[in-house]
Amino acid sequence: MMLIDERLWSLFKGRWQHTLTYWSVFFSFGLCVAFLGPTILDLRCQTQSTLQQITWVFFFQQFFLLLGSTLGGLFKKTLRSSLLALCSCTAIISLVFAVIPLCHHVALLSVTMAIAGTAMGVIDTIANLQLVKLYQKDSAVFLQVLHFFIGLGALVSPLVADPFLAEDSCVLGTNWTSSSSSSSADLQHLRNTLGGKGTVPSNMSHYPLHTEGVITTKVSFAFWIMALINLPVPVAVFVLMYHERLLPCFSPGSRLLDRDSLSSRNTTEPGVNDQGHGSMFACCCNMNPGKLRGRPPSFFIIHILGGAILFITDGIIGSYAGFVYTYAVSPPLSMSHKTAGCLDSVFWASITAGRLAFIYLSYRYTATRLLSLCLAGVILVQCMLLILDSSSVFLFMGTCVLGLCISSVFPCMLAFTEDILDYKGCATTVLVTSASMGEMVLQVVVGSVIHSRGSYTFLLCGMVAACIGFSLFLLLIYTQRIHRTCQTDSSKDVAMTEKQKSGDP
Image 1 (tube, rainbow, N blue to C red):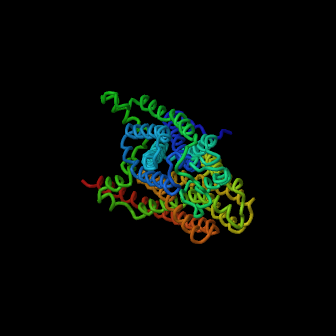
Image 2 (tube, rainbow, N blue to C red; image 1 turned 90 degrees about the horizontal axis):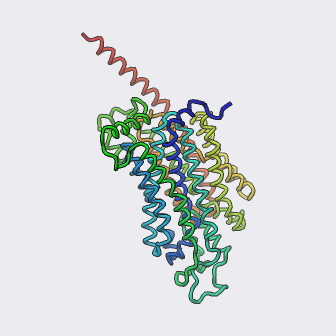
Image 3 (cartoon, rainbow, N blue to C red; image 1 turned 30 degrees about the vertical axis):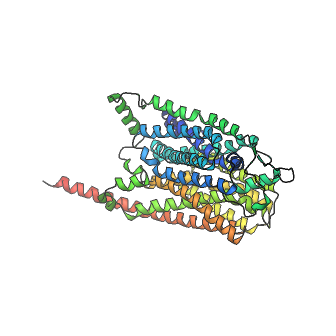
């Protein structure tokens, strides 16, 4: 028995170059997602800034990623503009990797990370949009592969950076002595505490981090290697544009326009309105009041519920990855710094493995069933973690299972919501933007709660968020049935009206 049926295989063979290009673009996105956390202390040394100053680069990256996700749909009016944006953004990411070692001031580094965040947001929106347009009702399997490549890139980035990270203080002060230097264990603890969330520990006095002196970091080599690893991605997009005759150097003759129209026609089913898939602003502007009045309330509720679910689930991913180390080294677990530092890697590895496994599962089962299984699994794992809060072994097991369960909520929800709306809504842009917003906002909320109430609230916050997400999903299922009924009634009214018109003399 074949792992994938011949119909899907034939679809892939007819569109393999587009598909592989979009997958490689998301590998570039993954590279840029994961490099900042492990290298933040070395970047502090490079810019000779305080820890409070350097953590602002986290905010700039996340905020402009959200902005890029919102504006990304503006570039997808044609296949040419979409591919041109992807080519530019992936080239910008390589350029950012190459330029970071030259940023010797925290303000310049923040601007660089803002540019990288914007490019990441545009990539996130356009790649999802184009793959949904390319396969539509068959997009679930290919979206799983797309998001697997994020995890793959996020795994590669820390592995490349690790050999070049400073084991001791990378800025040697003028009155430096071995006793005043931060030990390797202290720096590793601080690096794990910072994680990907950019919050500064309260007990900063324990870590004497110099801002003046001789810089000894070698992290520049890691960024230059990542720039080279990422370089084939914009080349692949450029080759696809050349193959489709979409480069600006081609004359805008009839053949080029025909080819661009053909590409759009091949990626869009007949009768599918492509207008609604722009940015969140364009989405609202493109629909005139008459069209908005003609939509049933369920149309808007589906957008809101889908975005809210991903706001929560991506927020859970971001907050868990950011604070699981802090929870593990605090009572009652009080794990060693080295052991607790493995939890974040286990979590991201399980997310990547889960997306790989769901490639096959999304072919065998419907998105509704998979989403029900995933969201129920997240609640169950969070509940067990609360009950067995003093077990270090179960924390590792629970982290692994949580990553497996929550890994494919985004691609499944994207395919499910677009299918409900018959690919006529703004679902992709709304979902991508909501997910980015949730990842940024919930980390701040959870961090504030942990700081004021203690580390135990970390698991409680995750449990509450998981329950809210599952409740919203049940409401989405109910709204889907109402929306289908509205569509059926509307189709009957249209058919009756046409029949009456045809019967008139």
